[in-house]
Length: 310
Image (cartoon, rainbow, N blue to C red):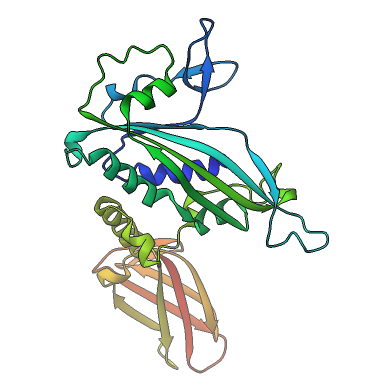
């Protein structure tokens, strides 16, 4: 549940010019010397150290920030037998962004924080769809931009004397509140989650969030799909006209695999450029395709060839 929501948030943040890398889900771990620092649990007892993040060009991580809480949905709490719960995940986003990629002045840190807050705060229908929830609300609670406070809270025992002020440091405390049927808590009601399934690309607001490179890729891919759509050749054979020849235009070049919609036809034979052919066959622009039909009875006949374009 929380992973799907964070994957969605990270995808949004990585589309900005502020962050090139984000780790999640981190927690504060204490070592044998009693010093704490953020780490991400991988597996088999292994922890990944979240390194001093101003060594990277725009870095952030999301970590836990307290206990997860549960409550009955207030909108449904008076309904007998209500199964709806509100689960609140308290989290913290910590970022270090070079000031040379944002406006570099005394307001930079707070401007950056407010910009990120505007991106992540929402009543998010897309995440709701992803995890099968009734509602997902992401709400920022507070932020701080004081470098020594942020680093001191995240890394105990860290020498802060050489702090680098050319980076904008931001810590944002936020909550993800999920309203969901309690039977979906242990296991998502929707499986095989694909984040793209939550996006309505016909929504102007969603489309506006795409980068120019993404729009170009989508258009190129759609052009390819359109070129590979099914081609259909339809033929009408008038009474007594049993053999016909056509020159294939570029728009109908491709591989034809089946004949269908036969009306008053017992059998069909084909030649391509005067050479006998059987389905499936491929024709290119300017090829001469000839067909000869054997009718069931006297009268007009028709049929279709279907296949994919080149």
